Amino acid sequence: MRAVLAREMGGCRILGHVLGSWRRGPEVQAAFKTAGFGTEARTFSRQPRGSSKLLRPLGNLPFPELLQPENLSREQLVDVLKASVVDQKGPLVTLNKPQGLPVTGKPGALTLLSVLPELSQSLGLGEKELQVVRASGKETSGLVLLSSCPQTASRLQKFFTYSQRAQRPTATYWAVTDGIPAISEGKIQAALKLEHIDGVDLVVPVKSPSRKDILAGVKRTVTHCHVVATGCGCALVQLQPLTVFPSQLQVHMVLQLCPVLGDHKYSARVGTALGQRFLLPAESIKPQKQVLDEALIRRLQLTRSQAAQMPLHLHLHCLSLPGSRPKDTPIKLLAPLPPYFSRTLQCLGLRQE
Image (cartoon, rainbow, N blue to C red; front, side, top):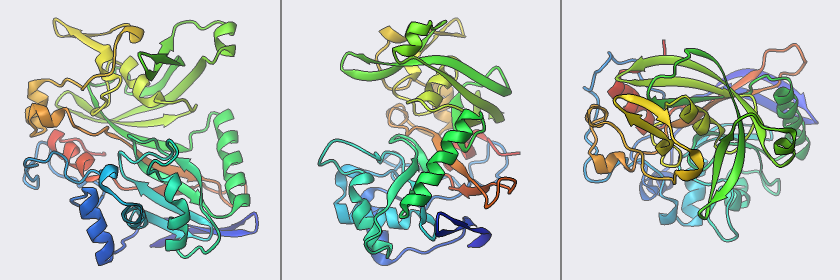
């Protein structure tokens, strides 16, 4: 690993690193196989557009590298998380969380939070138990920031809160969308609320919210959107949320008529008639498997049944942390893309320019 910056924070020394290489022991490799991982996460390569030379057929099991928490013991999940560590220095531990792993859950459920005591021991932290500072959601892959120092965790939480109030993004996500946003760069703004519909918690947009709506839980949300590359009717999009709300990024992309690939919760809100897309009433649309065009499914080298199991292509790629002094350049923590995400980029000829 290559050092970026060292500093003191709350009496706890922190050192930021750019991602480097690491090796897994035999027991960790076995845990990854049990979990369903086929290959190691890595950044996508710059292949010629439309190139498929390096692609491997998926076989009978679609997306074999995906985590299957229901098949894991607590010990195996700890091994998987230990192998997912991309940075550890001082009190801070950064993971590249697999898609499908919940951070929290019901009592007794196997989650990231439930195995933090064992993970802390496995990483040699002794009685200093890790706590979650920042994390991506269950269906989202990418960075999770942990800290074994309460003072450091508190200072970072204050930094994230202050940055949000100042409209300065600290998190950068990569997404692949079905469709190309009309704006190549700009802000997406929408008022959102959380509703319990037919036994499911869903986020729905609210037009022209009143003060009463805001007091009742409606929140004005903002995301900075930048289209990085386009191809085959899809886009590689960089998303930086300036507010925090459940499913904000997925719903914002649906409002752009460009749902995220693998969004089996909100994508059905986008209808099509005579080749034109339009929004359906959010309150009346139940979650269902995403329906993709046959041409796109062929381009992705999937069957329709495999496409119905496609994981969400939303990855928390970068987190910005504060420097030692206010004017210091922020530290960047990075997480490489999961294999299925890289494969999709290659199939669609999408590259970061």
